[in-house]
Image (tube, rainbow, N blue to C red; front, top):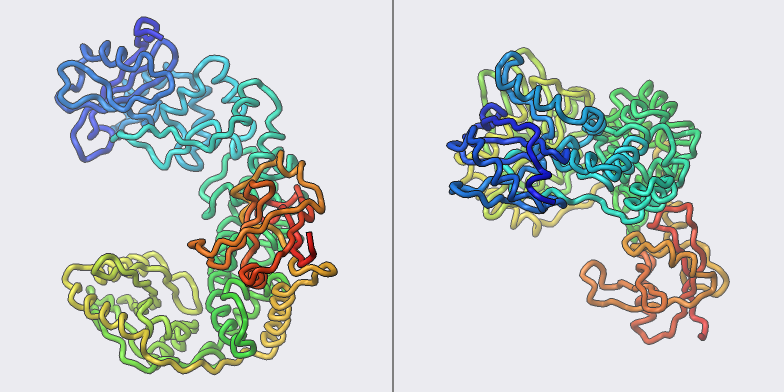
Length: 620
């Protein structure tokens, strides 16, 4: 490629201030004869210096892959920086009638409008309308086929064939070339082959989902990664999935709340059961009963914390945490039951939930803060905290142990016209100082607090982190270092009768999972965890039931000293899952010769639990 073939069709000069930046620099867009659009950042005094353009074009003439960061140009003390994440069609922050705005519109009018529209449709999620992506689609026949693939499968093909930028970037210094590359998908797209099969293999999902209407439009911000949502949808029966992007995005915040509640693997496992009534039907029914539904799901965390404390009273050897209990409750009783139990508990949290386990003074940071009659008051003892819960009809009293252990701070907020809410600020160590972050704000009966209250809560967060409170934060840090040595009394808990019965059944479900029925003579029958990181579809076809696998102890594994690696002919498959590896690890450490055999591969499952094995003590 030569500079001659890269003659300039059009050029556009703007200043960074005209593009909305506070700094002073020059920006240059070039539309080349080969169709590409390139953007550059230059020193401010070079603005409008068209004499530089031939040298700039010459400097990038042979850079077909877009790897150059700076162009070596004579007379430029600061070399022009290539802006791969700048928009291909720049629109300055100027009035529509401004002359520079008109120039920008004329520049954009000369570009391929079909490509611009294609990229703009993807901008519902991240930023796709960049020079980098425009140039990938404008490059002859290959570009046309990339565009066809992205338009047909935007959610699934775009992250592989294009770059998902977090935002526009007119500062430069990065190539922004990363994408979820897959040679098979790229080859199929460039050769014009059917993409459904290779996309299904790439994501580990069914072809029916790849072709589903819900995947025919780019999704917006869902609160969870698009890849995880794709995997979740594949677990839902086809007739129960959302039928459109609008349906998907309506329920996505609730899915994100459920993932926070029980974790990603549990949610994937429960998907088929949870969404059996249908995606839209489930959320419609729950919204009618629990409003606002997102808050109601989040509030289940408080109930599960108390229910887990009660569970440990019933079974001191119980393995797991609040998420484990949430998984069991959903599997045994469903989401409506968990929400009902949470609502019942939140009606009377003080009577049914917690007594303080630590009776120690908590140091204040500011005590009471008055900002033009907007009052913030720290809640530093259990009785005051419980009074706040009684007044606002929520369960803030159950957070006392977190306060007494120095992990969080609860503040009561009151506005001049009578609005009231409770704010939670989590505490994190940052170097030799503490940092406070607003994580929850609730009004009476756990309702949303409103815009003005949110602004006040953010002002309190700024005050908590202000330099003038550093001495108080230092004292609080020293107190946190000593509070863990303070003995605590175990809570005496009791749930309502219905919740007690359902908790008992959930604990029975956990016990059954902890000790599942085994084949005759087997010590363990389990999936191979971690296979998602070592996935090989060709390998799955070569494994047959009964084949010997290798067990390798890894006592120095930084994540689990009881780790047991599972391999086949020297190739790592994954590990025996925790906590089921305990018995196997101890037997191997004692010198027992255990045998592991491949049981089966289930292609319809996600890679997390696709391969299963059996461990026994038989002789080889």
